[in-house]
Image 1: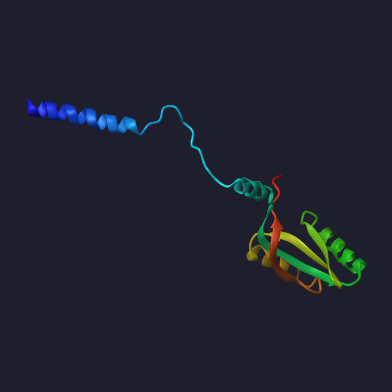
Image 2: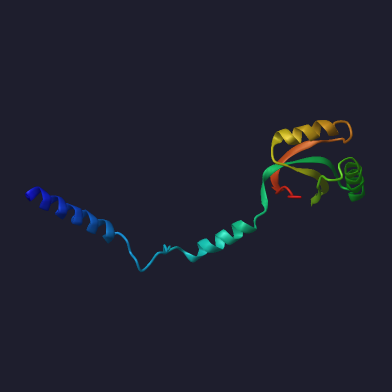
Length: 131
């Protein structure tokens, strides 16, 4: 008889502990955080660049020379993006958005002999297009 009472009492005791952990009124989790975290999350969502590689195939102080090299490259690789930037005193022509050095090396070997220089630079690249 004592065992039955002990079993029933322990059952009700365990059940009451289990239900005491459930809050019926609120089913949502409330996060108390600094409001600047939300701003950082929004900034991070807008970033559409990742670390990668580009090939520099031309640099010159004359922009016409750089534009001619760009046109020559685009005839061979029309789907590859080109980027002309000015870093005093030269215009730089960089091509491609390569995610790995291996991809950049492959294109570098294909371009060997067509352009005077072909240097791999590590920098932020655009995310690949989804066509």
